[in-house]
Length: 177
Image (cartoon, rainbow, N blue to C red; front, side, top):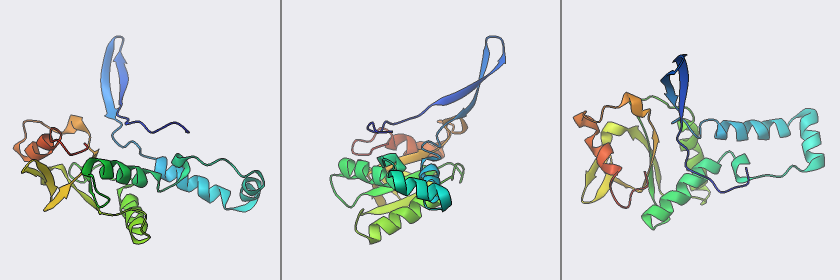
């Protein structure tokens, strides 16, 4: 919990028969749960006897213990990619799938933006809405510095012409994908 963050993408497989494996799912929902776990930790520490114990011992906090930590991480990464403190972050999914935590991130970004902690825009869209033009990725007319994919790549056909922009964005310099 105290080490610098890493980008995580992993696959879960199940054994169907001896020596036969099948992909069960991709864990593209990562950091699925980190926001909820941090919020739950804060709730536990704020109530009853657990809160009293927490106050008495002053537990160590790490960045991952902050419910807004992931949104802050996306913002910092987008700032580095865009070279500005007003970047556009895009969280993309596939046909409104894998939406766990996304609404919460939008609300957190808005609260942090109003308090002056972060800047720029936080957009949510479908991978089919992404376009690449003039060497940049665009979502609904806004230049995008960072794309966080909540997409199961097994469900996306690279031959689908509707995802050309999304695939091109993955190869576009200046876009953190």
